[in-house]
Length: 177
Image (tube, rainbow, N blue to C red; front, side):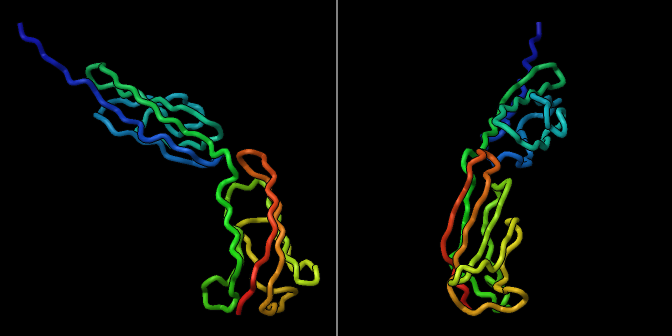
């Protein structure tokens, strides 16, 4: 009697990840060849491919099963968690709108906002600009005229995507030419 030993399939679903809610990521596996099956299927671009894309809206454990041609299976999982903070917010303290292509526009850096409002005031309290989008910045002008080198006040109000937390920050920004 001859006994044939068939190698079991292997699969690794990758490292657990933490992302901001709404982030689109690609899940991917390493393993032997075979048929893939991902679950849960909700939100996955493909449940039978090795690298489905998913937009993560809540903490989810994704399971992948690989079945080889002999019907043997291997299973692994990956946990995608949500960043429970409002992400990293960086607000520079100076910028130089001098047309050299470096630091010409004052931006608030951060992408974790559902709502965003940035107001910039001069030293007398007059509002210079109001910005409602993190992809928009201040170019150092007011009513089409370049502002002088000076220190300006900013006030930031935002609503965090992941937690609903209200973010309020204020400080100064130096316009340097």
